[in-house]
Image (cartoon, rainbow, N blue to C red; front, top):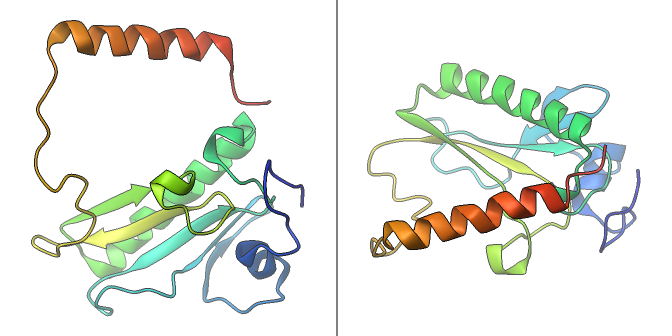
Length: 156
């Protein structure tokens, strides 16, 4: 396991699961990824919440090498399909929180796969619907993000 920008593999909860030092309810494992059931389950057996992690200790999603990012996403797709078949939800939420302001709780890349049901009250992105900016502001944001795409790319 390699170290990310912050934190270490030695004190990482997910690295301890990857190494087998801590028990987890495993869903999937391949050479690069691991998927396991999150300890916080909203209403099992109706719901299902699974975490997908790279085995390598990398703190932020944007630090994943392209090939590993592709493998992580392939595992997410497979797990999401399995959760869909098992839990028969009305939908699936997939997300990753990166950094303190996004409430990242474990400093190791992980994607949540969560079965969703109408009215479950989970994952409210906006308390109130925000006002939409005008076209000029949206175009300016798109221009700036496009420019940032050419400046730096994930490590290959």
